Image 1: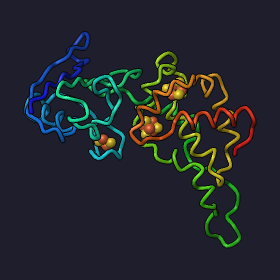
Image 2: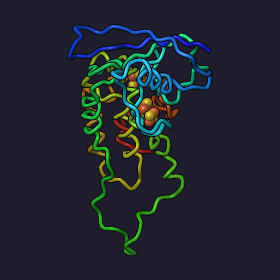
Image 3: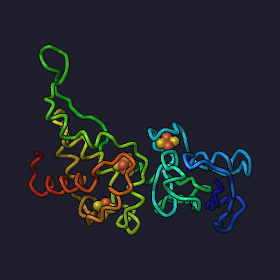
Image 4: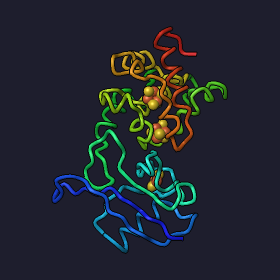
Amino acid sequence: MEVTLKIFRYNPEVDKTFHYETYTIEAHETDRILDLLEHVKGYNDGTLSFRRSCAHGVCGSDAMRINGRNMLACKALVRDVGDKITVEPLLGLKVQKDLIVDMEPFFDNYKKVLPYFINDSPLPADGKERLQSPEQRARFDDTTKCILCAACTTSCPSYWGTDSYLGPAALVTAHRFIFDSRDEAAAERLHVISETDGVARCHTIFNCTMACPRDIQITKAIGELKMATLTGKIE
Ligand code: SF4
Ligand code: F3S
Ligand code: FES
């Protein structure tokens, strides 16, 4: 089949503003949008710039807007998006070149929630593991699945309006550690997310949940965080 691929282009070294370029290429309905971008880069224009690494939905590097929706280019198939395809960079982050955005503000927000395991207590007497029941492990299982692709945060209207808002991805990470029974820094993280740019900026819009390529129940997780900040209880 023939597909029309309209791609956002911007090279800060030569362009005053962005423009779109359109390519007509042969594709299979099972091709991924990433395959089409690789084709254009390989056969039409080697200067086309985009991030990718694993090509299997694991690394989170190729989130972009495909026909207006945030997706991973390596997971979106032609048969899912149709034969007229517009590819644009994520919204809310500065475009560095073509489909590449500056991820630094995203990771700055991520770092604020202390995205690592904290437990300074001595190990149990046997010197082995900090035990956790299957139920305790299940409590935060969903939020362990995040691959930091930023599809959620950059689809959130609250983030578009206020980029100091921590955003759903950082909150998902906060959830992953706050609800881990082995971690000891929940109070510190709850303090961070209780501040002005924390959970209060989430207006339950659900774009984040719809955009997540890992099907994480993000809005639900943020709701649990809101409850924890109000009650001080982690249940
Ligand atoms: Fe991507 Fe989902 Fe993680 Fe957001 S929560 S960064 S959409 S994997
Ligand atoms: Fe934004 Fe998701 Fe809340 S889209 S407003 S973080 S539910
Ligand atoms: Fe790694 Fe798509 S290239 S998630």
